[in-house]
Length: 539
Image (tube, rainbow, N blue to C red):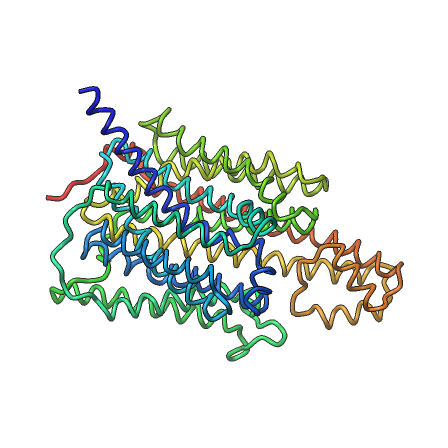
């Protein structure tokens, strides 16, 4: 009996390690190359904008195909969908590692890896449900979610180290090796029989992909185009930014998608998504909190690395090291909360987690007022890690336990759609607010600085009206020297850039703080009882 129990625990541990490793790998690609964009661009003969486009398309493919990926998993089996997704993802990683130009990079990284992730990530949610009893799921979901969040924090460290010492291509070559190991271990994963195969809702797939694609793409390009009013030189329609029209058009198409799904149900056909699921308060609450978690998390991981690498001049590797405190407390919270408080109220844990996130944001804003060095991010990141870990320990179990086990694939698709939408919006919002505040503060600062001549102020207003880049003092000083600006004026402009950069970071973080307060309000949608007591079973 002892040996059987030990074997069972070992098998469960291997399954959990396999699923957590998959989540880590899928999430890693969204952050690992952010510190290596310049080298990637040089190696494949493109610009920084070209590589950023590839990263954007990776997120876009995932966001638009998650619901479809979840549905395919219910039709062919979750483990089979997981394995096929791994093969596609591995092929994408291999293609990316050898990419000679941007076109091949986009095919490998954005398309193949994005499609593979769209099959893998919903399947992970369903496979946790089929491999762990209800009482163990909160801890299992917490560890899987923690693996994804740690990947966000560790990505810059891994990417910075590999790029600095070797080449960025080794990151993707290493992913191929990890995928092979995951495929070998996937045979130990218990699956549930797939549902009866019915015709796939092709119209629903096209509508959901088009609606979410337009909305997400509009948000992702908002920093370049402007949110409402177009930036100088940016396209517009009827005097408004294309971002507004894309988001509105996307929302309209999403509404048509819901109408189409309801129509299919009414006519006895299989829908892509059972829209009645969204009427469940617990599921809606879990999806809402997933959206807020990834929005805030993505915003923080956009602003804090910028502060460390640009404002303080740390290298890519040093920046990654400074983000490690978040990973430590995140893992402690994600694993410790279910273990120490297995019957804790999800609503209470998530509320306290958001409070810890808010404390981290507020402490960082306060530290920016002082203007200290890199060490000022340590305590805020410890708080932020506790907050994200607390959310990770609860939300996966909250969403899946809201529906019968056989619907976990659809829940996984919705869950990962919510997280990708949140991450896309968080990055775009934090970046847009940061650049707008930085521009306004910089232009106002040089306009009132007596050491900056009027001619320089006017030229800066013309050149920077469309948005000022987030430049380090060293790069700006070099640019001013190359332009022939006298040293006194150049130093005055650099000083204003320093102050404006801090203003932009502070305002961007303050917006994230306000969003965290809004998220706390929506925690009332979460169940107050342990999710193990609210698990529903199929009839």
